[in-house]
Image 1 (tube, helix red, strand yellow):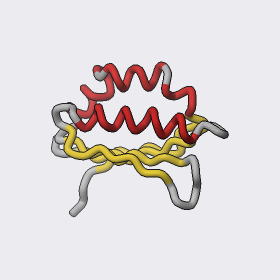
Image 2 (cartoon, rainbow, N blue to C red; image 1 turned 90 degrees about the vertical axis):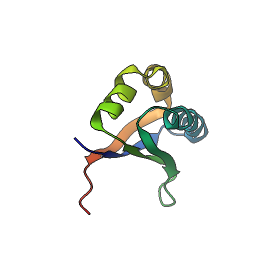
Image 3 (cartoon, rainbow, N blue to C red; image 1 turned 30 degrees about the horizontal axis):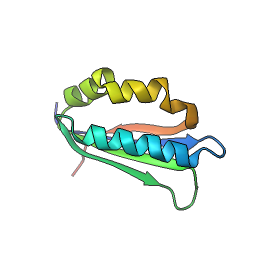
Image 4 (cartoon, rainbow, N blue to C red; image 1 turned 45 degrees about the vertical axis):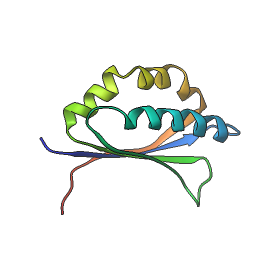
Length: 98
C-alpha cells in the first residue's frame, strides 16, 4: 500500500479547550518525529471553538499502524489525555485521488 492520510476531529469537553490543546500539541510534536510520519498537524475550528482537527500524512499504513499501536505518547493520550475529549466528531482514513 501507498501513503495514507487521516483527518480526525475531537471535541473538547466544556471548559477543557486549553487542556486538550496542550495535550494534542505534545502528541503532535512527538508524532512528527516518528519514522514514516510525513506530516502531522493540529488545527482548531474557527467556527466551532473546542473542535480540534488532526491532519496526518503517513508514508504507509504500516507506519501509521506502528504509531497508533506502539507509540508510548499515543498510549499515554488514550489513557490520560482523552479525559478532556467529549467525543470524536469524525475520523477518516483517506487515499489520494489526484
